[in-house]
Length: 206
Image 1 (cartoon, rainbow, N blue to C red):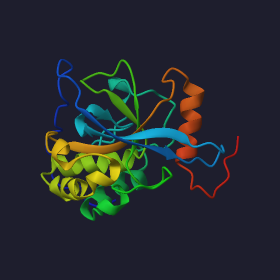
Image 2 (cartoon, helix red, strand yellow):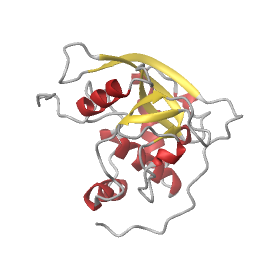
Image 3 (cartoon, rainbow, N blue to C red):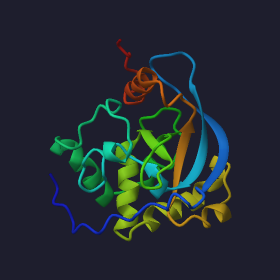
Image 4 (tube, rainbow, N blue to C red):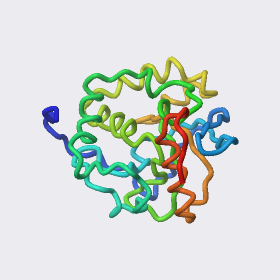
């Protein structure tokens, strides 16, 4: 696994009392290999500290203690060095084209998120797909390299129906695709995550 750079203190998310910052963009759709109808979604700018990935971006410990639902994600970052290596390596070799684009599938493009109740620490959303991509973005901000992501985001903002001026009002802006899925329906969440993790040409099995 690539050598980890010195780890800064993980920035705290906004306090729960602070109103969540979200800037809505244009509608989009996410194609899935397991169903003919794509999932409706919308581009949105949110402070990255309000989005909870399945695992901590630095320790790779599961975020279940902060309210991330167990038995949803399929990648075991906490015990798989190969999975841990991905956000470390891709942060160092960061290419914004993989996360700032209008891909119709979940494999590339902005992470896919869901508003989820009961999260601890001021979080408002969870990552359903693109956990590694979101961890990379969070690591860039924490390591003082956020401009590598923010500047291309500002340059491409209008293609997502969002004004650059609005993005500049967010301290650590992140571009996401938010979907409307019942957060209490665990089988539906699990099925969506499995489908989002598959290449679109690969058949989904039961």
